[in-house]
Length: 383
Image (cartoon, rainbow, N blue to C red):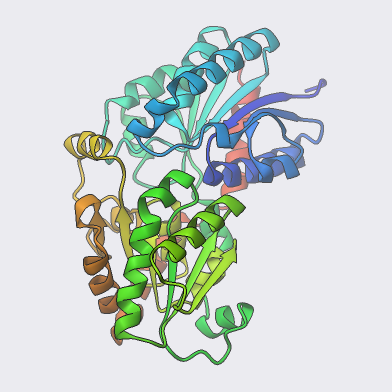
């Protein structure tokens, strides 16, 4: 390819920012002059990505929440679509965010622009009919999970299984003492709980108070317990601090962190985690966990009616069985969560989970960036 390859991308949340950044770096090793632009986050920017809009513009959780910002998001998509059709990149890669990206990919593909959809929608969990839209939208799907390629192959959609980058990055064993040393907790022998309420402000609004009240209940039983709370932005940190103040929980032994989620999970005896990518990360560091999920009532009932599986957390989905507790929506009360977390620190529980978590880890460890870059070149070279 003599001229510089121009690749447009859209990532709509922090997990997509991570995936896209890894892919950009791997593609640039093969095509050093390649240009990347569109909608993305700080990790993509560090790899040379030109963000026309920041990913925060798209980062909302749930259908009701998305409806509130429908006009703004639709306006961004219309503007982006017109600009890309006029600009005609060599390739468009939609990174996750299927409700935004799939419609965009369909329109771009109709105009002769090749497209990749990176991260399959959860067609194995609910809304399986979306595979028809994916077939219209994408020249190729890059799948992160091993149960996805057979579904696309059956539907005649080109697919590449690339694995998950977190499985490449996180070691097969995470030593709890070493993780505590990194957080300056070398001699902490009382139970340590990591609380991960989510990276989005909407998640924190739903779960922040629940997490604080849960910690208060645990503290009443275990006064020496420590609570690690890794947060991703200044806004989410301030919001969580406000929840602590409003619920008179300032006396608890909190340790609020900027980032350091993996270290916090590794240092913990058990993890309270919002459903999403962080549950996968907790599984990869091989820690017991309780998964919670709470969205607007209308969003939850809509999703529940269309779900296929009896669980939502990725560790349970990948294991094909209920191996870690999930407390969803109305069941996600501080009392029930505290009870579940205390059960997860029972002697032998961490060791009980090691074998199944390690098996899944090895399945996901595929050198994602290299595999994804190879798939990108395959689509670029296709006449």
